[in-house]
Image 1 (cartoon, helix red, strand yellow):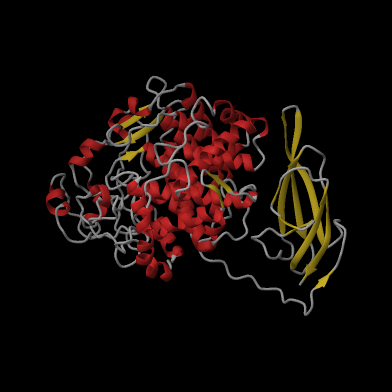
Image 2 (image 1 turned 45 degrees about the vertical axis):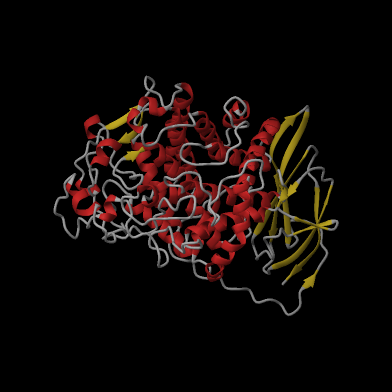
Amino acid sequence: MEKFARLISLAPFFLLLCLPFSLAGHDYGQALSKSILFFEAQRSGYLPHDQRVTWRSNSGLNDGKASGVDLVGGYYDAGDNVKFGLPMAFTVTMMSWSIIEYGKQLGSSGELGHAMKAVKWGSDYLIKAHPQPDVLYGEVGDGNTDHYCWQRPEDMTTDRRAYKIDPSNPGSDLAGETAAAMAAASIVFRRSNPSYANELLAHARQLFNFADKYRGKYDSSITVAQKYYRSVSGYNDELLWAAAWLYQATNSQYYLDYLGNNGDSMGGTGWGMTEFGWDVKYAGVQTLVAKFLMQGKARHHAPVFEKYQQKAEYFMCSCLGKGARNVQKTPGGLIFRQRWNNMQFVTSASFLATVYSDYLVSAGRNLNCAAGKVAPSQLLAFAKSQVDYILGDNPRATSYMVGYGNNYPRQVHHRGSSIVSYKVDPTFVTCRGGYATWFSRKGSDPNLLTGAIVGGPDAYDNFADERDNYEQTEPATYNNAPLLGLLARLSGGHGGYNQLLPVVVPAPVEKKPAPQPKISPAPQPKITPAPASTSAPIAIVQKTTASWISKGKTYYRYSTILTNKSVKELKDIKLSILKLYGPLWGLTKSGNSYAFPSWITSLPAGKSLEFVYIHSASAADVSVSSYTLA
């Protein structure tokens, strides 16, 4: 307690220390572009013609051959040359979640195409790794022999044996995470590549069934993974995680029931977490289930889903320092969980805080913490503070993203970046020779690992930029994956999106679209009272999207689409809603009327907005009291 009080007393000092950097602001768009570029440096296999990280070449071209399966491709997880299935799948899940939530912001930044390619590079490999319904390859190479050598991926002489799980050697955590990754990725490609999305979804369903039927920890079957990616949390969290993503991808009652019926027994409603990452998924599950609850999809599972939500908010409050048990932070304000690669927990927690903040805003409610009610904006401010710390707003004024800013790590613990490019000097680098020639040299890396998020500082904000300091200078794909959404959100803003409405990932466009011509406003706006009808300038269409029974009463979820059918911009509107007996999302209450939500100031010609409400009666009476056309 004494230590905690001392950290609080130091906060104003560090606020002053960081103030000059905060005022300068950060180029989140540039950081976003760089963070996606890092994934190209981690590619294994045959590199494509549009590869932008040009110091890399083809590698791992015989992966899987000895086992009679094609396992060429995928990602190296960190600074070594092993392909670990569990963190790779989690990386794909988090990149996909970033696109699902913030695809429109990614699109406006011109990075959506690159982000989707990054997902597909991983999901293509996961398809290869799942050659049969109950067989999944979870690792290529092993950490022991790999760590004995310091070689470029292009020169690998280490053992590339492939390791799998099957009914006799189960791995519910690995299969569950891979199912989650493929289900999430299917949502990403549903619009732009529906046949590929269906293929991913078929694999996801099979893997979930495999994971659920043949239960066991994957590192008991693939024992060589124990030293590197041990499944400490077990597999229940991954089974719930997979079910949540499959429900989001399919809307199937089966997966909703799975979450409702198993929430208590599998820990989804019981574990109050202060971390989220490739091993422990509970906070992620709880966040997704809370979203389903706020969307009005819980049906008769609402009491159970409310317990999930309580634990989701336990996590959020702990990040803010307003909970019953709070996360540890450095004096400079960074979440601190462990010495080795602490940044993985920072980016993952910040992503959850960001999406939950937007869920709360969309639902029109606050966060409930032990310290009292908290505005959603505080969650977003927390996430921004963590991102700003990573980008340089910290006591050392160090950017922990390689290539961003002026003061960033130059001696990254990464084989490929620390050895001269194969294209510059194709001379073979031997297993131990790499240590003598390249690992031990004190100069900057010959290749810039642009966008990589390294492990980061210790509990006191100290950091040593040294290649052998792997705890602090090694990057990882799962450090970067949540940043795609975080940086897109900070760069693009909220833009009036309701995170509780159905997701449509926009078609990828890598260049910023040309600005749309503005309609010249009329000299004086005209305010006209009018009833709602399809012939009026404002059309209103209502429909029932779901129904369920709770405690003997039938509830309905109504979706209402309001469309501006005029050729002018709708600047203001007042709606009368009578016979409404439940919660409503997507509008702002203004006296006895309803107006645009806080994130919308006008509605262009031909555009629509959607609001939803839930009650146990027939549709409410929605009519237009007045409107203003510009």
